[in-house]
Image 1 (cartoon, chains in turn blue, cyan):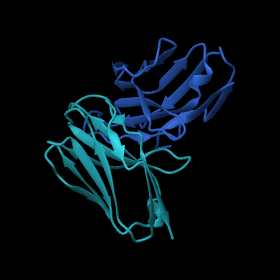
Image 2 (cartoon, chains in turn blue, red):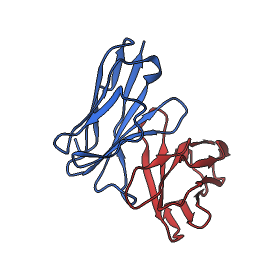
Image 3 (cartoon, chains in turn purple, yellow):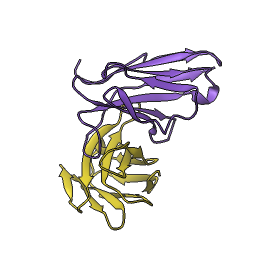
Image 4 (cartoon, chains in turn red, yellow):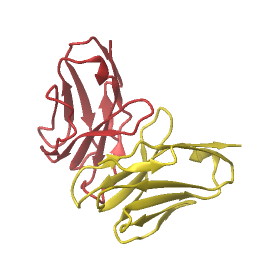
Length: 115
Length: 110
């Protein structure tokens, strides 16, 4: 498809488990963003990649959260020792160049529920 | 620094106008506006760069007052399809991450 693809669309896990969320951006987009959105709130910034490197990871809440983009395309958000407070919709977005003038294209999100 | 949006919610009748405001406590390079319908991903509306340029998208337009670090989104003659939550996002420099406000929920009734 031509859009941003996120898998899984839904993930239910137990407290303490490890979770991986995948994002497949639009082909050719160099910038990739991860956001977290709780009900009734705006998207909360987590991390921003330019190519393979994390340009800004200041939004990652703690060291249980980690993200990679090894080949500058697909990205994986990894959450260790999940907690109930991690439950949210995790949104991925890509942009052709990123930065101040780059329109973001969002995926449909991965809904994570931690029991 | 998260931008502040106002109002938090608006209810309109079809055909009425609305203004949504977005302000920041720090200098801005650009302001982005997105709309999100319930259960869907946010969708891009427009970007405004510093310089005060006003942009338009059909009957939705926006302005950016760089000096006041504010942007406003203007919805004219609202349609039922305008319902959703509107988010502004701000970037402090030419590079960097986009920080979103908490959103303004717009409901347009027939």
